[in-house]
Image (cartoon, rainbow, N blue to C red; front, top):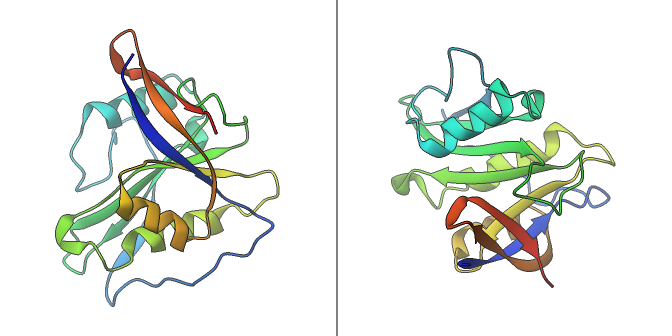
Length: 179
């Protein structure tokens, strides 16, 4: 069974969101929700991962109302950042039913270092500030940029663990916290 070491961050809603991040001038940000004729936001290429999430959450109805994508566009309307928000499903057994996860965060390489990911995480955390709402952020231990985003965004390190492949597939694998 192949594994990848991961760090598990989570929101602490008793603690205020730290630094306030802002977008550079003329950038825009917003929310996208799946619809029958819209599998991905405009400007985002369809991948097997995004198609799988759309099928799981929209077609099969598993947490459909809670799956969405936060997007950031540059002044020329190019998609330069996105972060997925999704509910618990079989790959994340450590999550509670009310929890959400911020995952598959990506920033266009030429736009990195401008705080776009930290801004996105901040806005996601502000979207639903309820005591029972916990946001998770799982990152590979060697992804220093993403770890830095989590730390800047007032997420607390909850533990370490791994992503375990099952039946030779990373798609069917699970994430486990072991310390």
